[in-house]
Amino acid sequence: MGSRTVWARLAAAQPRDFAPLLTAEEIGRWRDQTLDWFEKLKEEPKIEPVHITDADVQDFIDRAVGMIDRYFAVWQAAVWHGDNNPGG
Image 1 (cartoon, helix red, strand yellow):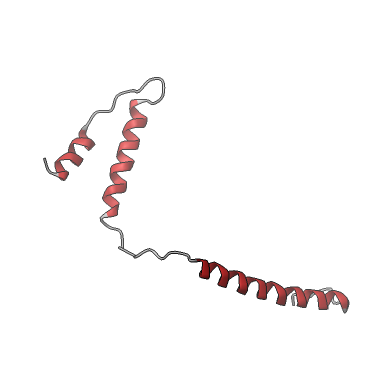
Image 2: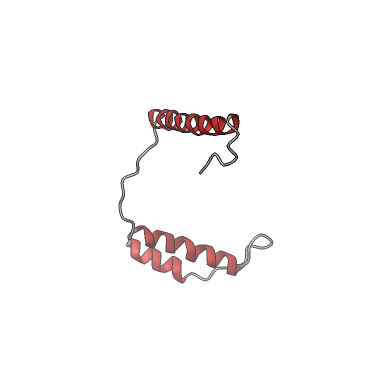
């Protein structure tokens, strides 16, 4: 039995209640959503995943700290000099 036949049979199957946990309608919606998800995988752009490394995290932290230091210095100078509008 080919995979298309299996998918077609799954799609055509009549769900039944799984009382008291799930209704047939809920099971049918879950099935349809799952089959739809697998169908959409065929349309996926095939982008290769990029992983965040420890070096990436450290680089982000270093840049964020530098930016916060600069903003804090501007704010601190404005407060010390009585400027009520340090942002602009």
